[in-house]
Image (cartoon, rainbow, N blue to C red):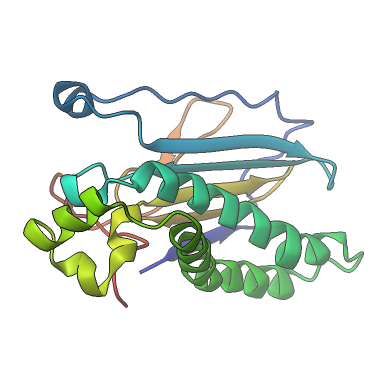
Length: 205
């Protein structure tokens, strides 16, 4: 399930500092000789001082061997949806709060569909190899009917302005807001998840 929450009043800032970010490989990946399967993107857009941020966590378990691609496509799909569907609302001089809220909810509902389309296009262009198909038959038979599982990933993202922000979150992890006084707020209340058991873009509705 995609959870989204928007704030019309966080705190007002004159401008955001240049965004910084990074991703490092986890210990479980290192122990198994796997690459970093996470992706992120930070950009500043000339849309009333907007800062775009998105991070996607590729699941990394054995049956999610294309989750490095899945995480990249999640970030890409989120950015595309914002540019296509949400920025026109931001450019509207009326700035109707209800239209903005409704538009953001549309992004949340459309994200999984866009991600599935991007993964299907990648799979069509880069089919599973004979070795990968053998793994599916012998070890991960659920991928016979749902090959998209191999791309499993989560997504957290935001679009920040000087005095308000929009946030979207799917999966485990946390989104935190820190005000100028150092007060930390968890933006989403999430149910407890255990290790690799988490909500995912690749789960069936």
